[in-house]
Length: 93
Image (cartoon, rainbow, N blue to C red; front, side, top):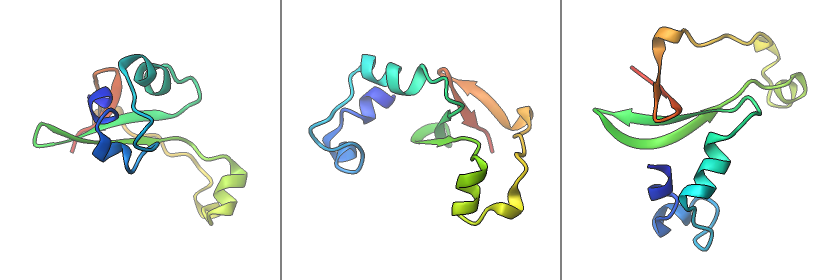
């Protein structure tokens, strides 16, 4: 799904630029082979894939920069709220 979205000129206008499309190899390298703690998610609504979102733990310096000092503790997402979907993590309402 990401390769389809990231080869669409309308999507690329807002992400990476129109002339920088993604083939399957580029999508696999950028989104599926991460080892940096970033968790990528395909967002679904009524069983239709509508987007992509990612999240990661912020370091102390970044938390301070954005005013998140009060939230200095990482709160894990309960595994019951998450399911694996096409090798990415998907939130389930």
